[in-house]
Length: 300
Image (cartoon, rainbow, N blue to C red; front, side, top):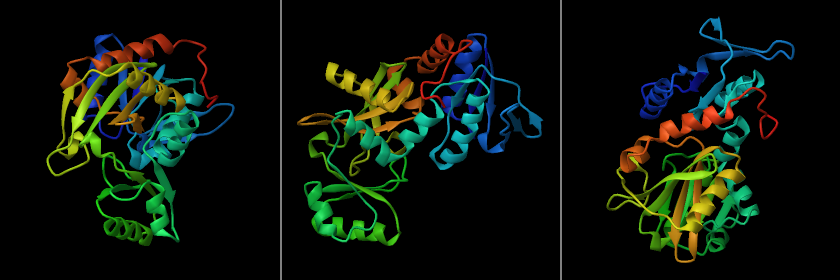
């Protein structure tokens, strides 16, 4: 097969591993910067051009689109879909997952347990918003934030009011969530491929930090998950329409809570911790699905 990876940086671990896994299986693979693509949206003969040349049709496309370029990156992916390329994660599913509010609302509608969450733009009553999620301590998140950026733990009511008012002054949309103290700075990242949890790691925040992101100094270990955690991870990915997803779960006293669903999960942490060939599993899934006559689940 002829496969394209949409990524701004082909030297990243995930891109290198996906290229390696594809080439080991005899596939031709190109890494394409989506911001260097431009498109002819013609119903009779749609095309994609890249750095001065028209691209041939690809059998499959693997989107590794950073959150900063979601709008244009998913537009390019839609054009590949229009040309008949199989997408490992459809454009519409990626945009669902990148919209934190929309994704939480979709998960809640399916009865998936979440931390108590409030959403606001310019709350007239900051105190009422704080009470909505059970009071301090609480977590305040910028809706547009990613990788732990724009996430603040407010340990007291006064601190919560100050943080919320500061974000309000930036004219920003914010999420306010209950703080799950018993998680103790840990979460479980479940890697879902094709409706199955293929790997799970527990991430632990570094001392003095509550965000468990590995690139923020957190550590990881291989972990066994319960049947309920496995089921909730698969349901979360399916609800958003994602074939590949990183589902982050907090282990709360009342049961597993989905904190976030990542449409472009990094492979370095999970492969390094588990020793599993996740990139190979993703390519094998493409081999099973990228066949003539496939149809988008969402209709594009």
